[in-house]
Image 1 (cartoon, one colour):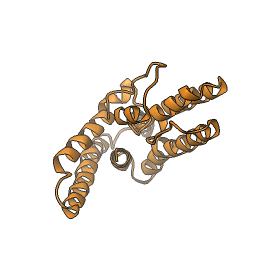
Image 2 (cartoon, helix red, strand yellow; image 1 turned 60 degrees about the vertical axis):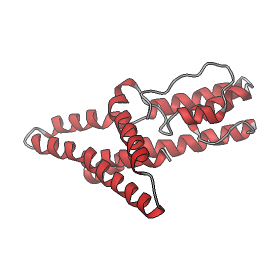
Image 3 (cartoon, one colour; image 1 turned 90 degrees about the vertical axis):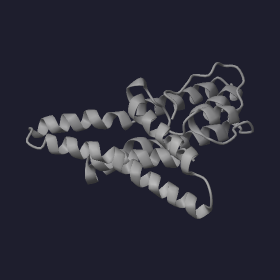
Image 4 (cartoon, helix red, strand yellow; image 1 turned 45 degrees about the vertical axis):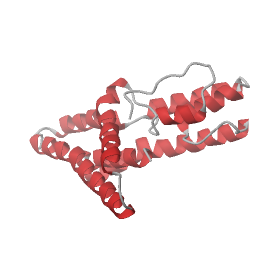
Length: 193
């Protein structure tokens, strides 16, 4: 993933160009940048390096990436979890919250939806399409009507809310940080396709 989402000026931007230069995961704040960008960089490097050859070899390269990346992002949390076992529960809870926070993209998600909404309310369909393509969808938005842009925004917000907020909480409740962070890695890898 790029280090951060870039804000595009109000000038015309093709949906294809915007899609190529943005991430599917909605927003990456400077606080999130180190871990989430590291995931994206690892995925990009591994894809460019290993995603070659026959479909079978590409399948195994992808499987290897998921296993290696999942382990890479699970092991530190296993070690940290063992280190703080004797600590008070409230301290552990506070630390888990702080360590889980970087994988949430909730504020950026809402901000992107609000920008599209404001453009639609101002009857600026061109700007709404551009913002939709830049922040929320990976398809060409150049021919979408206002209702279609609104619908695509709602669908993208719902999908991204699940991927970037609810699912990490689910994986945290099942297996703690050692499962929540690998989920985020796999989700990022799937979104990069």
